[in-house]
Length: 75
Image (cartoon, rainbow, N blue to C red; front, top):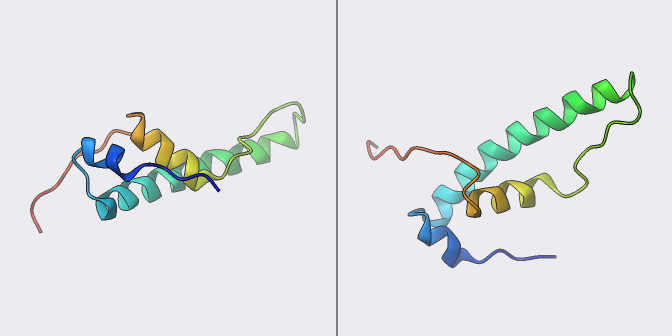
């Protein structure tokens, strides 16, 4: 299993708990896209889907800056 460096998340200004919340929301979005693609595969079997785990893709996207998020300091 691959591990992602926590220090990269700290560079984004997130602690690990905030990062998990943002990544889980992004993973839900990626999973919805995957499910829609699977539905379309019945009509067009040549479509491809992401074979990697959604959670790892979401965390990697977060670290690489592909996920946009806003930080709410009002708790």
